[in-house]
Image 1 (cartoon, rainbow, N blue to C red):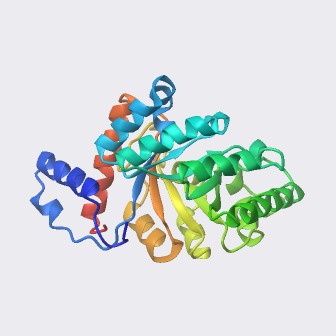
Image 2: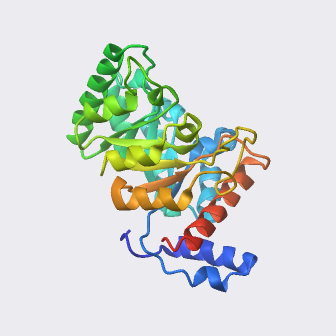
Length: 290
């Protein structure tokens, strides 16, 4: 997919938003840059457990362009991964990434991770969170594990990244681990910012993006309540400065794809995923961003 062209699926989804929301004015917004949008399958974890292939069909029908698989995928057999890959291909969905637990970044288990991600066509293997440590020595070990995994993945044409949790934003011996990891991993190693968590920890993810140009390759798009009084917000319902965030991500951060990931809302999971996509497209149109 070229970076300056709307996919047919995304265009039709935006057209549907405009039709419902009265939006000739919305459609008049000129796209500046097109970044693919996928769904973190954790959003639909219960549906996926019941029938993964049917859930993928629903995701494609909504208008998402790709997906990110999560923890349990590491237990798939290669044969089942091939079945999932065929479904993705048939639906026109990409596998952008797969969240992988730290316990599978070991010498014993990482070859299996690589095999599954090669089958799925993953662009990134993402450590779902780094092991917590109260000392910088522990974060030094984390940086070493991530760097080793990065080199193994690079050899087979797959990229590596870290998804932040809460502790990366908290000071340890006067240093934030996320800053330490950025300085002690290769320039080609990427970061995936979970915005709800980052803003929730008062971590200023926009400042992190600007301090690390080209390193923040993907995002879990979640909203956040500044006074912490509201939970389960859909994107666009809270206090994340979305226009500023998108601008930093695309002008400086080096974003390659966005992901909607929602850990519950006032709607059913499937309705949450669909409403989140529509909200995202409205945000992009209002901000005159593609």
